[in-house]
Image (cartoon, rainbow, N blue to C red):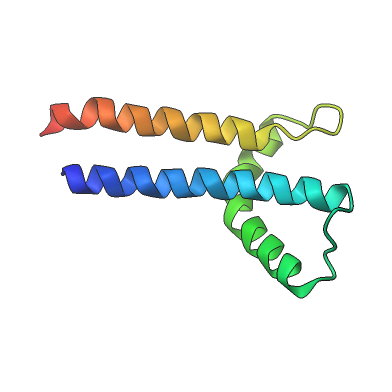
Length: 95
């Protein structure tokens, strides 16, 4: 059971880092630091968008952007951290 908890925790951590990478890449594209016509940047951006957009979409429907600032990744990261902590708190009681 501990191995399964550690695997789920690792998957949550990886997804949090993908959310952070997506946010940073979107800022870099918005400020014209990187160009999306570059094939590598386009491929990475497309991958990050496809991975992170499905869980972000319901949050964006509920919470609109605030002055052009999208806070949905922050909310999702907080929810994932809460879920991971909750998992470690209640899982030992189930054993």
